[in-house]
Length: 207
Image (cartoon, rainbow, N blue to C red):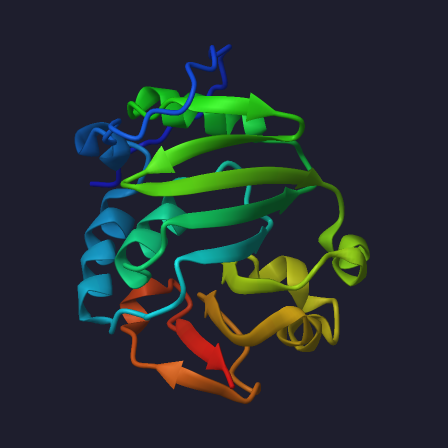
């Protein structure tokens, strides 16, 4: 039986940074479809990536999806102590992200167009950019990690998008996507295709 997920933003007071706050896993689970949550166990079979202690990540078409990238980060990058997240969508979903974090027990501090919070000893600096990624991408700075999920239809009509993402990815950077990018010269890390509804899951390193 598939569980239903209801997303409704509500006013949330910023309670400040709290390094000791631990996400309540049962509440976290409520924000995933049952199959997607179970499939996260497949990440245990992926080799950890010995990246540096700081990194930047770009996630286009993010919606209010804060938990999927955090789950990947905590599992794949055990050395990370600080990460800068750049989330992008045509709608500003920051208030929904604040609601989700508050629901699962994570407090945050506010700033212009973003929030800061701790996720399991990792300091997360999240900035939300509203707009069309296909217009914004040329102006964005390079990043260390690219995260993509359920973006296949949106990028399908934009020839050259994946190649531009590859250009924006720093040398040694990591690309994580549930579809596409197979044609690019990435050093692929073995990963279960069960993590992608398209069966095209890819985690690759730009060499």
